[in-house]
Picture 1 (tube, rainbow, N blue to C red):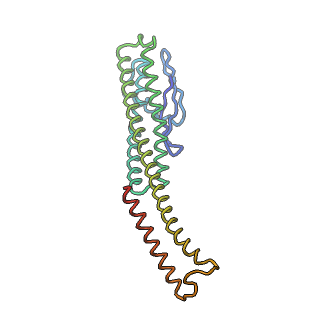
Picture 2: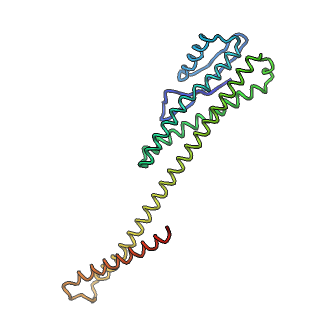
Picture 3: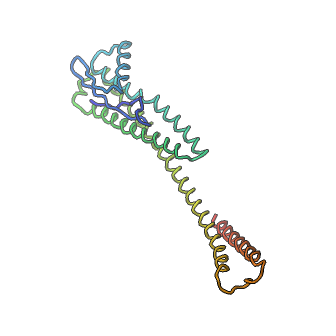
Amino acid sequence: MQQNRLDLLKSEAHYKTVPVTFVAQKNRLITLYHPENEYLINQIKSYCLQNRPQTVYQLLFISLFLISEAFFPYLEKIDKSKEEINQKLREKTTKKNLLALSDIETGMLYIVSSANQNTLLLEQLKTKSIYRQFNETEKEQLEDAIIEAQQLASMTQLNAQILEQLAGTYNNVLNNNLNDNMTTLTIVSVLLAGLAVITGFFGMNVPLPLTHQKDAWVWIIGACIILWLLYAALFRYIIGRRQ
């Protein structure tokens, strides 16, 4: 039987899960684990010193229960980090904070996948022929392990949905900001285009009105300002009607 367990060292910018394998024999329980989840074995040893399971399957189901239970404190840490980053993003949407939110979302996907796999594996035990050989205590402990795994799966799915919604919301905010910036730049370019037409017209080397007047530049600048104000008023009116 293989279960997934958290890597507490966070070798990357997010949590990931590492598998641990249990082999139940008649009088012993063999565990195959990675150094990254060795702490889990220490938890099982500590529990055995205090409670002394009577059978191999009792020890197995207790171990599976402890696997699911150990996820919850780190889910609380992830939730706290999510709230902190969300607060920062509300104040200012920066690339650094968006990447931090993405790291949390990636780590949560690992946990969701592992929680679902663990739950499915435990539920399948009840459909196996060996289930009929378990005594009442072993069945109760298996049921406890299943309930704990289901609660973990439910909580991780909820957190993943919230993170997905947050990421989608801030993506929409960035898109709206980009659209607003493009609209502003378009308006500015149109306003400047009108001024460029006037100044370009009077810059041609052909006979034009006001060519021989010394204060012609004043009239040209005045005409540009009036035209710019008319354009600005027109755009403000159009934008005001759309809002």
